[in-house]
Image 1 (cartoon, rainbow, N blue to C red):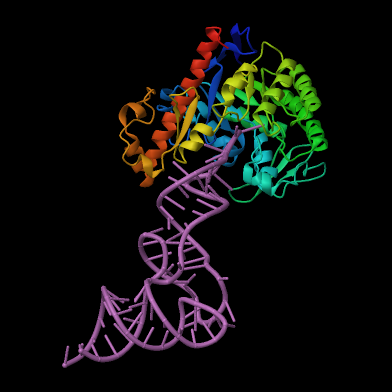
Image 2: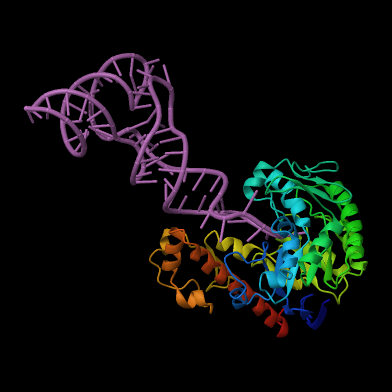
Length: 392
RNA sequence: GUGGCCUUAGUGUAGUGGUAACACAACAGUUUGUGGCACUGUUAUCACGGGUUCAAAUCCCGUAGGCCACC
C-alpha cells in the first residue's frame, strides 16, 4: 500500500514534485533509488547508506531467489529486517534478467545502446533478433522463462506468478510485474510478440498478488512508437499502483526522451512512474522533465568500484568524471570535489583515495561509492528545488 | 687469472634462422532494472659493434655489464 501525492506540477515541463508514502517511510520525488541487487548497496551497510541521501533501495528478485532464497529472507523477518533497512524498499521482478542473461549476454550489448566497439561488431546485426529466436542459455515461453542458474547451472522457471510469490515473501514496499525486457537488436516483430507475453503477464501478476504491497506494471515496446503507445495504454489501464518504464530506448538520448514523451502521456497522471535502470547524470534532468518520478541506476555505485568519482565542474558543464586510478592524482592534495559536503570530501585527499585504489584496498571502493551516491542524491535534490522554484 | 652461463617494452619473463609473445605497470577509451575491481585499444629498430645468410632475438667474433665455479 502506498500513497502518492503530487505537491506541484511544473508549468514549463511535465516535471512534478511529490511524495510517495510507504509503510516504511516516504520518498520525496523526483528521487534516485539506490540499486541493492543482493540486499545491500555494495560496500555500504544500512547505517551508512542513508547518510548518502539515498531514500529508497531496489533489490532483485532473481538474485535473491537464487541466493539465499526467499524462504531464508522470510525467516529473517522479510527484506527490511534482513538488511536492516527500515525505509522504503522496492524489488525488481527478474524481468531484466530475461534480457541481461539472455540476448544481452549473447551479443555483449547493454540495453540503452550498443557501445562503440559493439556497434562495429554488430554493424550488420541491427534487427538481428526476430520472432522465433531464443537466447543460448535461457528459454522464453508464453508462460514464463526458463533460466539456468549462474550459480550451479540448474534450470529454474520464473513466470509472472512465480515472480509475485517470491516478491511477496521478500516483502518490499513496492514490487514490479514480471516482463520481458527486449534487446536493442530486436526488430519490430520481435517486440510486438514480446508485448503479447508482457501484457498477459501483467494481468496475471495483478491476480496473483495477495499482499498489500504496491505493484507497478511495466511498459515495454522497444524503440517503436506505436508499440510503446499500445503498451502504455494497456498497462496504464490496469489497476496498478504505479508504472515502470523498461526496456531499450533506441540507442540515443534524444530517442529516450522521445520514447518517454510517447509513453508518459498515456499513463494516469495521479500514479507514480519509475524509469527502470536509467540514468547517467546528463539523463536525469531530461527524464524528470518528461515526468519521471523515480529511477534507479547502477552508475554511481558501479563506477565507484572501477575507481571513478563524479564531481561538480567549475564551468557550466554539469559534472566531471574522474578516473582516480590515474597517476596524476598521486600527489593531489585537494578533496575529490571541493563543492561537496560529504564526509569523504571533507576528510580525505585525492592522493589518499588514489593510493587506496592502487593498493587494491576495499576502503577505496567504499569511499568512492559513498561519495558518488551523495553526489547523485544532491544532484536530484537540486532538481527538486528547481521544480519548487519554477525553474524547470 | 681461467672456464661456463646470462643481457628481449617501466618490471618480470616466452621465443634456438623467416620479419617479436605473455603478465603486471603506464597511457587512452568503454560500463545505464550491477558478475567486487571487468572489457577494448596503444607502447620494443630483442645490451652495444661487426660478420655469415635471400633472411638473425636466434649462428660466429669482439666490447660492456651481471651471475656461478675453479686457481
